[in-house]
Length: 176
Image (cartoon, rainbow, N blue to C red; front, side):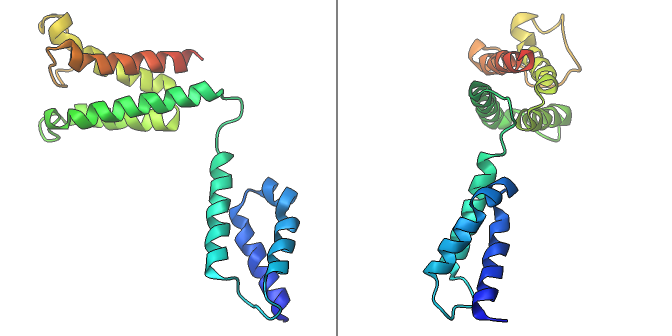
């Protein structure tokens, strides 16, 4: 097997990091350019080219990973809701002891996973439970309404507002 043939085979193997459509459109051009730039007796691609091809392939896959037909603003809103939810639960972590209130902690994790996966309706239901549970002492005076007796009791509007922002954002995503 010649050095040129081995090098081309290795480059083609590295190009598998790119999506199939990208390889069909630009694969031969990339192979031709890489082969022309290599030395005459080179059998292996340099490490720098290997890393560049792999990272470029993953970047191309990430650019194409977005679901078809989803408007740009919905992606931005989902990312914003995820950021608010993550920050809200991260700031309240001392109020969510996992040994005392495991349902609340599991609900927060399930909500974040649902937002990440794009399950707007499931995330909306979970965020509505969290918003109502966190608002019960201020809105319902603590006695009239409890879901399951879990969750922290917030007594300030500033502590409850992020939960309702999450509900509002997920409502828009679920209706869309």
